[in-house]
Length: 381
Image (cartoon, rainbow, N blue to C red; front, top):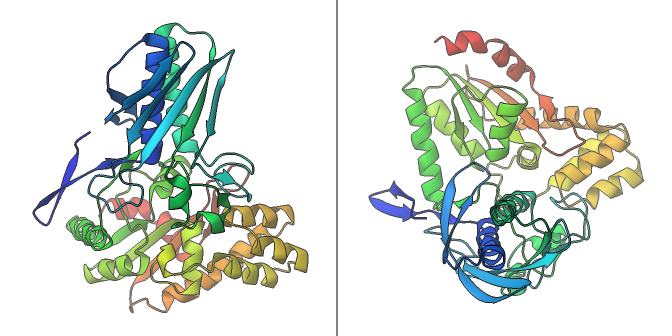
């Protein structure tokens, strides 16, 4: 892979995630094991369909067992995992496809994360890529048996001490992650400069309506649940307040915010930027909202001990407090956002979650309802 983007006259390289690294290493080992192939460059497909070519190295190969590695390349992005070695040990088993972690891959110890308690922290995106890649190798080889894949990251145990993983409930190593499979080269300043540029470009369409969304989860939400992916949007990442100010500066009169509750709950705290570097406070905020909704002490303690907003939502749903709490949270967010709303401007917002067993959309402000009702007219502007 040698994709680049141009920023301030410089060519910046894209990189690949820990999930893509693990997938490439596993495919290299499986290809050696089942097909006897020795190519050091492996092609894998990301969840979005992009094909990546990743250098690999075979560590050893035996009749029923092979191991390969990939050196993680984050491109020109400042990434703590850049340059680490990620290994995949693939062995034959009677049937099925087993994916687990070894040295340096953390174990989930608290509910509410991507994987259940007790599982290795190999997220669903990488698990999907691993399943697709190794299934293709088995099919090419005509192999009817099963495979066991063990991902290990020797540097992971030490690296984990520099992350939020222990606090979140991932112990013993780092997570194997990556929703897109690709690392985009971007410093914080460069990222926000790009957001401003996209807002400026959106303003050239001579519409007074703009939709700002938080990231990849929001894209999926718009496409699957709202069927609104045909409406132009700009991704704000964590720069919610700054993006809003940029939109007002460019002359937009109406802005609709759409974001995951994990980020938008921080707006209730008045945080201008939703990145964890600026603070957290998600659980205290949800505890406060649940208290106002009538939650008892045990429920409040359970929410307080949650490591993700989704884990807290499951608790609220179990005690029939979800919708009341979300209504209270939405009102607080609206109070915070409208404090900074210029006169004559309109601002609506929607927040959602994407976990199985929970409602997708959690709150839609009154202004958001009006804007969506007006969308056909807005599209015609």
